[in-house]
Image (cartoon, rainbow, N blue to C red; front, side, top):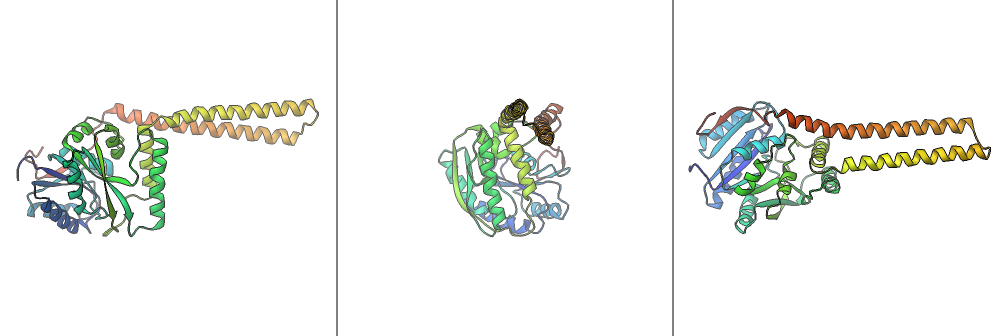
Length: 316
């Protein structure tokens, strides 16, 4: 295989032993149909099942397979970043191993790249086999992120995308610790295109993105690409101040016209205290989120650590 293959496919893996062999068969067939040199780079993100052993076996039988094994589970977005950093192709396509994103669509992404696009996103036009809650929560996720983020994302576009070498170089120049790759790619501003496809049911195993992780990813997207929460805190503060002023004027008026009530005064005071306390806690929470991310950045820790690698000319 040439040292610089034409196309690279980056596949993050976390506990996907049940589906890896089927995925590799389909991905290999899809890449061979394109008719150009390629490599498949699997990134084992701290799997606790037999995923790594299966990947090693696949690499032994296919010289186009390269493997990275991270020292622990660093998260899906970091695993994607690790694979992109080690990919050598003129194009780098990222997709998951669960076969919900069909490898056969890569040919369409490559075709769009040949027409001049530096970023080609695969957009889900149909989500077959997913429960209604998953579909509704996914739609709400994109709407929520686009509502608060300064960088709009294509609706229903996940991490199944192709990047040109120029886009990869620009992406690798962004060293932040809290990775939200789809937002970082959108921030680049390169020539972009979309390709529609039907998402298939998961071939085996369980989803790695339950509601809690989707909320965490949405939080990363908003806090990494928008200061709107900080501006919203200012408006909340002004609103609370306005409520407090109105309540104070109401108490003064009640005193002047002789309508004071100790019960009403106590309830009003309790409501005001709770309102102010709640606003303060919300404000401190939002500020804490931003400060925590600043703290993570200034420590300059490595984004990930590699435990093992296979198929690399330089083993270090």
